Image 1 (cartoon, rainbow, N blue to C red):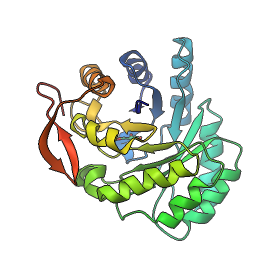
Image 2: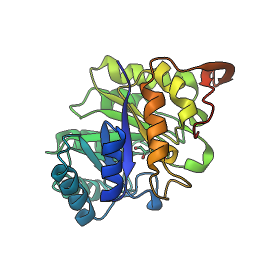
Image 3: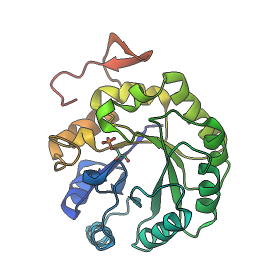
Image 4: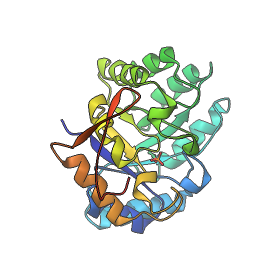
Length: 249
Ligand SMILES: O=C[C@H](O)COP(=O)(O)O
């Protein structure tokens, strides 16, 4: 099955461009304030309304922002507030640490559909990943916090990435990957075979805080949808990297 494309946006115009451009999920966040920067609630409500007025039935997610794991009440308050803005899924960043288990339990027990996003910069705690996979959540995702440090494929060994996908899927959960992924990572992403992959940096003209670029999104969607992607004998972390001449990386 094709990997579905989650595209992160920060305005209604970007959301409509992502809709027209072929995204499978629309993800609302403020990339200027961090990997999982949260948008003001009024903006979230406005973007959801604009998408629905345009006839979109695509799932919409939104992040709560960077709330420390130690602030469980703060996390749950933000999940409630963002979840009441009309989004289908609320995304919550999960840093590595012992508090992750209690936070995951609380997220699974709350009244909104939540996707925990494991931040891979310090490596993954597979006990926490397996714990999340066994909970009634809307999926489990991995991403990176520091976008300057390279992509997800730089942050984690290929074997860990595959273990993440396999662990979540074996528990029957939907699994997603993200982390400064570019067009040239698509074959590696396809090899991992998650249910969905998230993009922001790759669809912007400059940094991930700059405006979404429709041509870059179009190129990304075209390559992702292509049944066969040309590859060259170049490897990154043991995974094939494609040659995509003329397309933005
Ligand atoms: O949820 C997905 C992220 O917004 C992806 O952002 P990124 O491609 O800049 O890592």
